[in-house]
Image 1 (cartoon, one colour):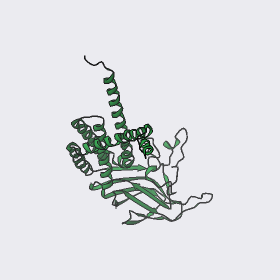
Image 2: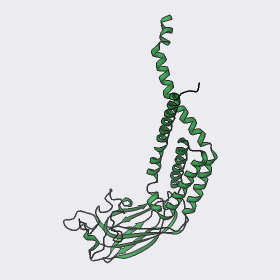
Image 3: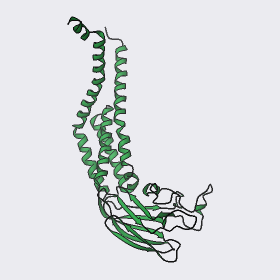
Image 4: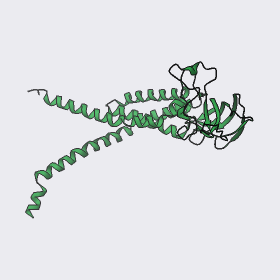
Length: 307
């Protein structure tokens, strides 16, 4: 019995208990700090301000144009690739005319284009909950008759007859519950000799324009709110005063609202990634704050004490 008691109070046991305490203590301190700033009125005030501002930004008329083959005005290509189901063989991987080191596609007589295959999709995330006017410049297959293609947003379906000469087709489509505009194109495949691709139609460009004010989609609202909360919390963890953290968060909410109003599709496509990246800032801020405090305490310990 005496041996058991002695073992319980051995130096090894005391060191293990101390190590456990030292490892748990920082976690408890961080949890308490988290609960502290989550209760601050400045956080909830800036969240209310941001939500109202973002909802207002979604009411601003917005339009965006995609160039499937490339934009000669900006001399850029492949900006459309992020919105096409190329990985699922929905669109041709490379736009045409083929480019080279001298960028001959910029001066080619034929306008740049990209082939849509027989089962193609176009997805524009987070545009807003509402109706959108979509104008697609397209041409049909090199066959004797017109190319019949069915275009749908999941609720409304339109059948178009595509000729070999490019023509603009305008429809009003609706976004889904997530605020994403998802268009599905079904076309009988055309397979010329020595070309295994299931060619559907030739796409030149797509212009989307809002029809009236849009409601902010809930997923986008949540992602933006998470970004703003992490911004405020990181500032507080870096020992910013509440009013300073509030000022930083207000600036971020204004920047996000401006992006939603002017460059919406460029922001809404990356909000999940942006929220994830910002989430890494809080533990990084906690490490910086703890390291700074440790250095300050060490300097205070080394400084001479008054006699």
